[in-house]
Amino acid sequence: MAMSSSARAQEARDRIAIRLRGLRSDAGLSGQQLAEITGWQGSKVSRLQSGRSQPSDEDIRAWCRACGAEGEAADLIASARQAHQMYTEWRRVQRAGLRGVQQARTPLYERTKVMRVYSSSVIPGMLQTRAYATALLSEIARFSRTPDDSAAAADARVERSRIIRRAGRRFPILMEESVLRRQVGSTETMTEQLGYVLQAAALPSVTLGIVPSRAAAMWPLETFTIFDTEQVGVELLTAAITITTPSEVAEYLTAHDELSAHAATGPAALRLIARAVSELA
Image 1 (spheres, helix red, strand yellow):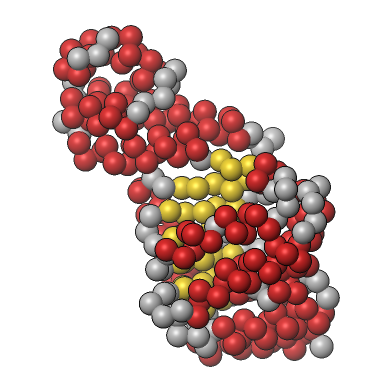
Image 2 (cartoon, helix red, strand yellow):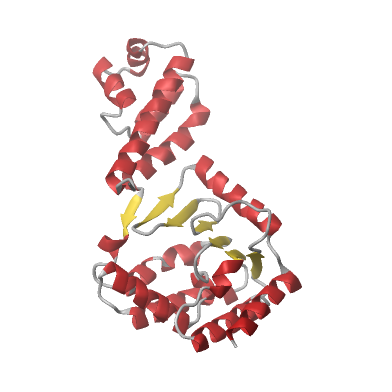
C-alpha cells in the first residue's frame, strides 16, 4: 500500500532525529552533556532526538557545533525544511484548475540557468506543443476530478517554455525511448509533437538525449527536474515532491549524468525520433 504524504513527512522527521542522535553518540556526549553545552533543558534534547519536536535552523546549528560536526549543519537544515514542506498535494493545488499550477512555477523557471530534465512517461513539458499539452492536461484533469481548464493551462505551459530560446540558459533534457511511442491525443497531435522535438533538438540551449529501450542504463526513474544544483522537483501520481537537501540533490545529479552517458544524442537521437514518426503513418 502506498504511504500517505503525512506518513512520508513523519518518516522524514524521524530520519532527522536519528541523524541528530547519531551525531551526539559519535561525539561521545550524553543527552545531558549536550544540553549543558547548548544551554538547553534536557527535555529539549530528548524531544529533538526522538522526533517529537521539529528542530529550527538554529537548533541544528547549535547541535552540530556541540558535537563538533558543523559540516553536517547545512545538509540537516535542508532536510528539516524538506520534512516540513516536502509534499505539495496535486489535488490541493489543482483544486481551482491547472492553469494556476503552470503559472506558479514561472518564477522558478525564470531564475534557473541550467535545467536538467528526465522524463520516463511523457514528452517533457519544456518541449510540449500546445495540442499535446492540452490533451495531456485534459486527461490529468479528468483523472484528478478537477476543473478542466486544459486549454488555458496548455497556453500557460507553452508560454513558460519560451525560455528555452533565451540566451544564457542550458537544458540537458532526457527522455526514455518509450515516451516517443506513448500516444497522447490524436495521431496528428503526436506527429506534430515529435516534429517539434526534432526542431527543438537543434536549439543551441537544448541537449537532447533519448535513453534507448535496450540501453544498459539505470532502471526508469520517476520524472524529475533539477533546477541548477539547488532544487529537484519529482512528480508522482498524487503529489509533487520538492527536494533541497544537498546530498539528495547530488544523487539526482548523479542519476542524470549516468542516464546521459547511456542516452542516444545528436544524429542517433534524431534517428530514434524519426523512426517513431514513421511508425505513426
